[in-house]
Image (cartoon, rainbow, N blue to C red; front, side, top):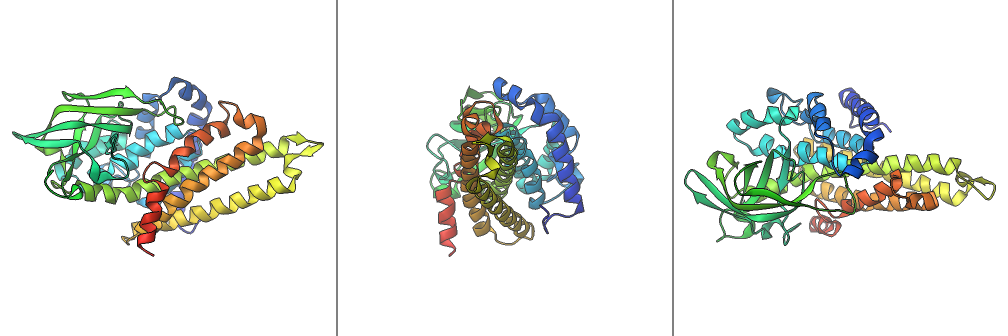
Length: 380
């Protein structure tokens, strides 16, 4: 479906990503899901092809595009039918790397951004803890000054790319004596740092091929030059990048919903029941048509929110609406897709069964639906 927000350049990017995903990802999804990981070689190849540099400024080897490009990219990754693959890429490109792009020093940008664009460095963001998810201000990981740097101690939970990332952006309290939101900073912690480890890989309901880890920091020394932006401004940085994160993940969700509906249309047109195809059943085809209308409407809302963000406008309400609406809708769409597949929809390793499990996280991660609706309510 065409959109006023997508120009010829973004259309060309969409086509390139779609072709790559269909050729290099879709045929291998079941293998990766069974292995529980995405091959490092794939990430290296995608970086070299330029897919990781869409949001990286041109002076550091990227294309310098905006939030609309993120949604385009994320949608096509979502169409892979493999949420684990899509989120592995998006955490690197849109959830973590922007901390350097938007808040890093010139020295940090020169040291890391080009390598992020080429895939030489893979990144992750570590904010969530066992007792702090959407409530970022409640984190307990602490950082204290030590010579020409900082000592970090704490535990991070549910960290996508946690065990494979070369650079992890860790949120830690640098001033425990002030309100939580005013005493948080972001540190770039390099893989292999003494005391920094992925203590265990987490088994999940979905996203089987993505690496999700618990990270432990025990007296990890980080040089002062690895502080991202200003001390005690980390909460602001996290809230700012949440806008980008939510648009990226909901772009992925839209791609998943659209692909699942397409697969289901193909199935019900072929599946014969009581002498005719399921498509001939009015109730089924009308439900599918309504789901398509809802996806189309949600897509336009998502692109509008991304467009407003690119214009520098306050889009917190719009992005929060997108996160709440699309996060719930994709679950509703997949429920119907499994239902219309009948018994086959319940069989492991079919696309709709995998997507049904994968999309459940979309109403939770990146800001639960309830939290998003409160952000909208505040602005009504």
